[in-house]
Structure formats: C-alpha cells, structure tokens
Amino acid sequence: MGLGGARGEWADYEWFRLDDLPAAPEPRRPERRRPVASEPVGEPVLPVAAAEPDPLGDAVGAWLDQDPLWGEGEGAKVLLADLDNLRAGPVRWRARMSVVVRLARQADVVGISGQHGAAGRAAPHLAEWAGAVRAVDDGSDLADHELLAVAADVPASAEPLRVVVMSNDGIFADLAERGRLVVASPGADALSERLDGAAADVVDLAALEGALSRQLADRLPGPLAEQLAAALAADDVAPVA
Image (tube, rainbow, N blue to C red; front, side, top):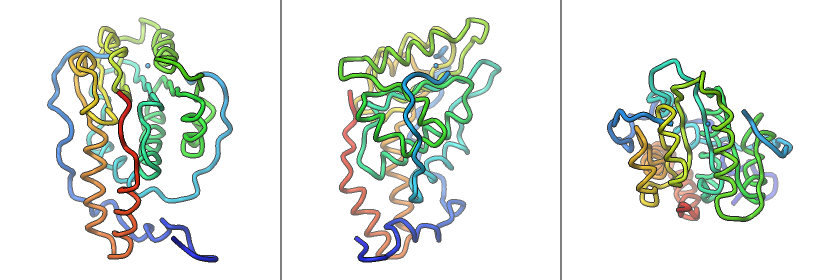
C-alpha cells in the first residue's frame, strides 16, 4: 500500500511489455463445429474513466487478439455479457471488463446486463459501453432474459450469427440454433452442461487469467510480483453457476 503522495499501486506496470509474453497454455477446447449462437440496451449508467493500468486485462486481451473468438464467416457478431456471472475480485474483475470492452468494439450487436450492484461496479471499467448496460433488480435470470431479448431483436437476415456469450448459464444454449455459439466462461467448473454441449467452443477465463498472471509475475521485479500475487490472492473469483 502506498503512503502519502506515492504513485498508484499499478503505476510501475508501465515498464512491462506484453509482446514479451510467451503463448499461454490452451484453456480453450478444440473446435466442435456445431452451429452456434446477441444493440446496446437500457438504463444508462454514466461512464467513469478507469484511472489505473490493467496489466492482466491487457495480457488476456493480447491473447484473445491472437486467437479471436468470432471464427470465420460473414454472419453478424453478437456479444452477450452477463455481469452477474462475471463477478470476481478487483484485479480479475477489471480484467474481465477490459475483455468485455474489447469484444464489444469488435461486435455488431452488444448486450451487457446485470443486477444494479454489478452494473455500478462495472461502469468505471466499461469506457464508452458504460451507458449500454441494462441494470436489473435482484431476481433469478432477469439479466439473462434481458440479454436474450437483445439476441431476439437481431433479424434472421443477419444469420448465421457468430455469438460470444460471457456466462455459465444454460439458458443461452438455444442460441446455438441461430449460428455459431462460443462461450467465454468465468470458470468452466461451474459451466452448465447444457451450454457446454451447445457451444462450438469454450474458453475458460479463470484458467486463462491464472496462466497469464503467473507469466506476468515471473517477469516483474520482486516487489511488484509480490504485490500482484497478493492482489490476486485476495480476489474472490468464485463464478456464479
């Protein structure tokens, strides 16, 4: 923890070059070649700029840039991000929101939803997409249904879709009927069997974050590596089933 006028806790990460990272292990499963299967929505949340660098988010984003989730084809690219499912401690949460922003900028249609607490927590990290979040009241599957409504509004003329779902919930499995469904799971140990079976591809974000965190720690000076390790150890990364 810094004292007085010290620099922010992540300031020194500016010294790190992501280009020096070796390839991460393979958290993604082989392509299963099944069909698969989400415009901004709802209640505006004022964007707040994220002040701190995000080395883990940058590392995950760089990995995804080398191995894009969308696949080949001409169909519309649809992103559905379930903020309630993506919950994590501060370091991984910021990294996951960075991935949401990166994918949203690539997509043709974007749906981002979560309960009010998750929506408020996400806003500082979602850049221009903060105002696209649809916040919902507490309740079973409310955010999921908001995201499914986004997908339902995509015309059939845009099919076959290329959909990336950031969630573990089986309710999204039927999107596989509309094109290619890829799941970016917040933790594959809690992934719905139904969604797993419907997906053409699955990326385990928790496994990817863990691998890249270790690589980052190996390349940082001792005190910074210890700081990153302590921050990650404090994260609550239990995924929502």
